[in-house]
Amino acid sequence: MGEEFKVGCARPTGGPVGEPEKKDEGVKQKEVITKEVRSMIKVGTKAPDFTAPAYQKGKFLNIKLSEYLGKWVVLCFYPGDFTFV
Amino acid sequence: MSIDSVFVHKMWNDYELSKMVSGGVPFPMLSDAGGKVGTVYGVYDEAGGVETRGRFIIDPDGVVQGYEVLTPPVGRNVNESLRQIQAFQLVRKSKGTEATPSGWRPGKMTLKPGPDLVGKVWEVWKTDMAFD
Figure 1 (cartoon, one colour):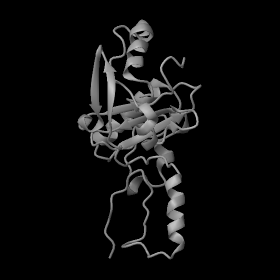
Figure 2 (tube, rainbow over the protein chains, first blue to last red; figure 1 turned 180 degrees about the vertical axis):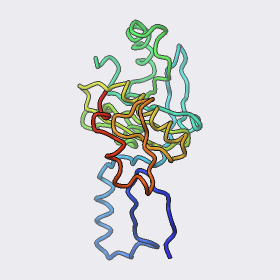
Figure 3 (tube, rainbow over the protein chains, first blue to last red; figure 1 turned 90 degrees about the vertical axis):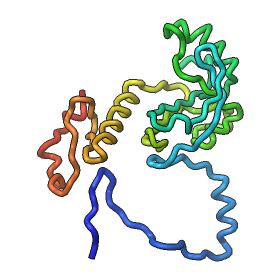
Figure 4 (tube, rainbow over the protein chains, first blue to last red; figure 1 turned 90 degrees about the horizontal axis):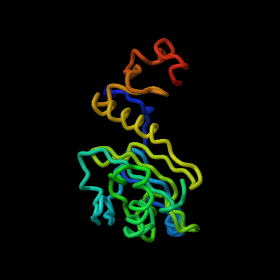
C-alpha cells in the first residue's frame, strides 16, 4: 500500500532505491572526465560555505557565509570594480 | 564579490560608489582572489580571470533557492531579485502550502497546490496576471 504525500510545486517523481549498481572498469576513466567538468550548483541544496575578506563602511572584515544562517542572503558576483555596469 | 582585493573595493566605494549611494555601499564587498569561491558556485570564468554576474538567493537555512547568471555586459534587475525574495519568504511562511504563480507580486493571488487544484488552475489564474 502506498502512502499519501503532500503535493507542492515540484513534479512528484521516483528514483533508484538502495546502493548504486557496481560498475565495471570503464568507470575510472569516466570519473577523471567528470572532475574536469565544472557543474553549476543546484537550487534546493545547501550553499557552499566560504570565508572571504570584505570591505564595509571603512572597515575590513572577515565574512563567513554560515554566520548568516537565520537570515536571507543575496550573494552577488560581478566581473570587477570599475567595470562600468 | 569579485576577484578584486579589499583595497580596490575601498577605493571603488570611497571614490565612486559613494557618489551614487549616499553613505556608500551598506553591505560587505567581498574579495575572492583567484576565484576560488566563484569556482565552487560555478560563476568563475577561468579564461577571463573574472566572475560572471551571478546572483544567489540563500534562505535562512543556508539553502540556495534561486540564482541568475549573466555575462558581463548586461546588468541585473534589483526589483526582480526583491520580488523573488518576497515570493520565497511567502512560500516559507506558508510552510509550502502556498505557491506563487508567474508574475506574482505582493498582493497578487497565490495558489494552494492540492488534489482539488489539479487541472483547475485555468479557472482561478489568467495569463494576464503574469504581467503588470
